[in-house]
Amino acid sequence: MKIVFVRHGQSEYNLENRFTGWTDSDLSEQGLKEARQAGRVLRANGFSFDAAFSSVLTRAIRTMGLILDELGQLWVPVSKSWRLNERHYGALQGLNKAETADRYGADQVLLWRRSVSERPPALERDDERYAGDDPRYKDIDGEVPLTENLDDTAERVLVYWNKKIVPELSAGRKLLLCAHGNTLRALIRYLDDLPEDGVVNLNIPTAIPLVYEFGDDMKPLRHYYLGEDGPLPPGEVPHKMSPDPAQDMPAKGEGHHERA
Image (cartoon, rainbow, N blue to C red; front, side, top):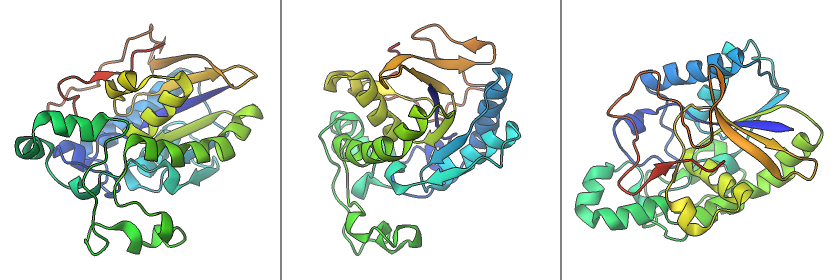
C-alpha cells in the first residue's frame, strides 16, 4: 500500500516571499513547470492512481490537475477538503517574510513558521483577509480559523486522514495527495512519530513526489523522494529542474525532509 505526497508547485506568494496560509495564491510560471515535471517523474516511474486528494486552494488543485494530465489520468476521482488547506498564518498572511523578520526578529518569525505550538497574531473577523465569507467555506463557518499553530493544523488534517484516506489505502487503492508544506509536515510528524524538535527543521520542497509505503497495520514501512530514475537514497532530495533564487527556500535553521 502506498500514497504519493506532493507539495504544490511554487506559488506566486512563494515567489514574492510572502506568508500565504489560506490566501488563494495561484502557481507561478515556475510552479506550473514544477507541477508538470512532477507528473513526468511519476510517469517515468510507472505510477498511476485510483483516486486523488487536495485542499480547496487553487495552487494545490492546479498542481494535482497538471500531474494527472501528465499521467493521462484526468478522469481519476478527486476529493477536495478544507481540512487539507495550508496552516493559517493569521495576521501574517500576505506579509513579506523578510520584512516581517526585520520587524519582529528572525527568531520570532522562525517560531511562528516552524514551531508546533506557537500561533502568529490572529486575524480580526472584519479583516478583508478573513476567509469566512468565501463560498468554499460556507458550510464550516464555525471552524474557519483566525490563526493556527502546527498542532491546530494537524488536528484537522488527521481527522481527514483517518476518516477518508486511511480506508482507501487499506482497500489497496493507489492514492495521490497534493497539499501544502505544513499540511504535509503535520502528516509526516504523525506518521514518523517525530519529536517537536525534529519537526521544527522539517521542510518539504515544492513539487517533488514523496512516496510512503505502508504495511497491513497501516504503519509506514519506508518513504523516499522520487527522481526520474527511481527512488532516491535516504536523505537525498532531487534538485529542482531549474534553481530559482526567489523560491521559498528554508530559513536559517531549517532543512529538508531527511528521515527515511
